[in-house]
Structure formats: C-alpha cells, structure tokens
Length: 57
Image (cartoon, rainbow, N blue to C red):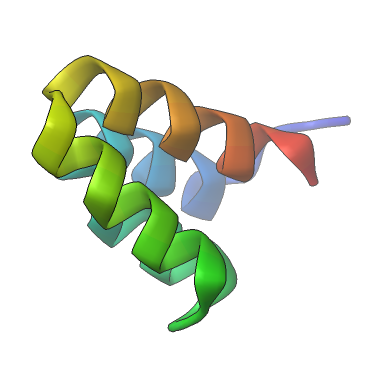
C-alpha cells in the first residue's frame, strides 16, 4: 500500500491534533467520539487511536 500526499497530511494532523486526523479519515461518527474521549484522557492514547484508524485502511 503506497502512501499518498493526503495520507501524510492526515498522519501529521493526527500527531498534532488527533481528532482532526480521524475526522478527515472517517468523518463525524463513532470513531471520532472515541478519539475525542481518548484524547481527553491522555494525548498519547488519542494519537495511537488516530494512527490506527488512518493506517488501517
């Protein structure tokens, strides 16, 4: 699987602001709410979840 420019932008956004990276990948849904909750609990879990969502597809 090759990375496109949009994938790289989403990865950078996921590191800076994890819910924004998830929003651009999956839209407004359950994954976004989970990521917002994880980011509120801790910044690192939010990043891990965001990267998982972005790199999964």
